[in-house]
Length: 438
Image (cartoon, rainbow, N blue to C red; front, side):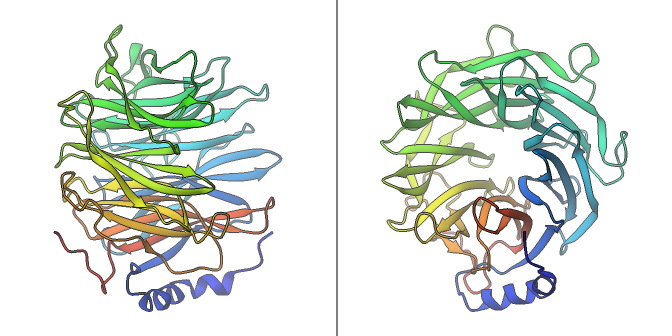
């Protein structure tokens, strides 16, 4: 169990700013505790509502006895930071709900949360729940919009869902792993699916190699070319994992859902995992980030990809060594790109050595994929805290100087860890070291 930390968190903002002021390269931020109940709480998703300049953070709560639920909370971040209401339940049943991801639909000002639910039989399904875009705007209580619905509920085990929304077609795409394959399901806008339901058509096969396992999908939408891109981990050979990509049409096209063949994103000799995707409309490019591990160490790498795919291989330039210290272990990358300015950032965890306590790091990339110097700065580490950082998530507020990072603060000793969800809110770069456009 955690020891009382009331005094610590009363002083938290002052402590953080004082530490940051002594570190020239460290971003100046305010640290905020999203939830402080005496339960294990782990961040799942962080997403931005561009209509209202608000963020939504979603986390998983361990309620005991093997059960986990999903909660969320809204915050306004355009002019300072202010919570918009209290935390609210998204999925709270006697079955464990976990591994949530969220996409925002600006057309209807609502969110779609996708997540796993484990049944008593051991089966795992993927479900969806819509949230209103503003506090009190729900029709199923103040926050929820409609009832929970099944996205994929077979006798197999559907895990690791991710979701994106394509405004041009008004469709969500949820990708997930099903027994070692990657599948997907289109979700409509509220009550606009097949027969007035929530889904569009049947599930889709994205990747199903009979000899190889695929998993951990990430999905994003191409606004200008109007398609979805799914990245996933591919077991090239025993113990050798690469990352591949597959495009899907932006609208349902039975019998012709896939666009061309799958292609390699990361295929080095290292073990490549944890793919994440972000999108730069101004550069007509995707950014893929991942963790590459070898010989007990791990690094974070990235690659730009042309959304137009003008050649057989969409890669733009070489793989980018985002954080590749010979001694420190970097992992858990998450990226975001400002759709207005094109600013691109990657947050990650960095340990001075494998297995040591981790800190949150931030790396800025040149927004031009063809720039000769793709990384603008070496990793900026946020100041030490009296606990490790785990699983950071990042959003850049469009056309603003703000950013938000959500992460898990870990307390206790393995295997009795307990986590709280914290936010880092502030400017995109330090006052001492402003980001200069090259």
